[in-house]
Length: 436
Image (cartoon, rainbow, N blue to C red; front, side, top):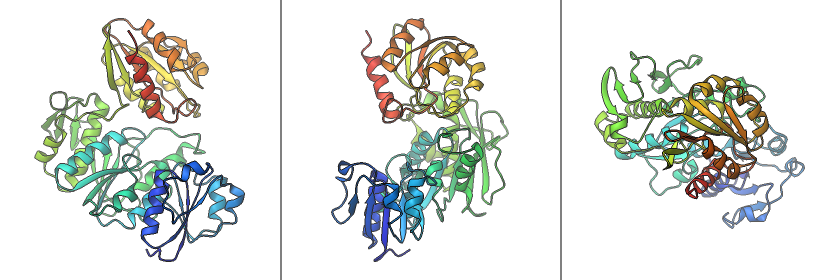
């Protein structure tokens, strides 16, 4: 695709938008970036890029462009994007733009939960195999930044959110990983089916020579790629784990407890998905096992912060939906005092009540949904309500006996009180480390 002399409009001045702008400039385009934020959001843009702060939908209807590139945080079908798209030749996302200038192989990873851990593991294995494997996309760096490296890697681990998959056209993963699916982002999608259809686009450009790595039990429509399955419930599957030992075609190949910092069935699934994906690119079992030795999940994913007075404090701030909260609870072997709450996303938390009765001693809710969540959870366990994390942590400590765990696994996003789950997790870390 030639961009020489073309007018490229980019919505969003964040890192993804800046990376798209730099790539479009490299390819000879005339680039303009629009953002509803003020001028301070544009300070890292190249001087050749036209900056338009305080952008509005009304302005967008008068913008003409050959190509419109939209950042994933902007609703593709909302009035703001629709206004700018009204006089655009084509609408793409940054990952689609980058894919059109990338000659290597792509391992695409999607799923409601576990994407980032799996992406990190795949990147680690591919790096050990000499293929690069740079983690990018929804995790790591923007794909366009990787494409612009002086020597782009032979393969990338590309995490793909539903928002990014909405705007692909030709993106072709040689290996597509589908980890799981559960309702999420109901504040953006009109139905669960619409959310699922966005994620399913990861398979649409694959052919029979490609590979799809899929968790057993996922209800997926037919697709062209060769399917490789993994499971923690079906021992006859190609890749199987009981949560401790990973088996490949019935043979034990990796002891997660002895050789890695990965714990729980959800991390066993992530490890199996990563190994299956890298095997599809020709990486040997020996290289994969060696690469995973000593690895641990990224921060904010059931991360042990400290043990105080016999109580473990676990940071699972990345749990931004019900499915991830359920996964965290299932993985616990000690009685739990749960910290949950945050932004109202329109999710139904009723399905978690049986797990709460089984795993939790008590619960402390906080944030925007503290009151309704407390009313619901009190039917299952002793529940207290707090305004924020600073109030919630000492309440949880008072409820947690020696031998238990205090688990921050919010079950929703953080944007009511924080800029993201990372800030929420770091706040929790600070509060816990201040306890005496």
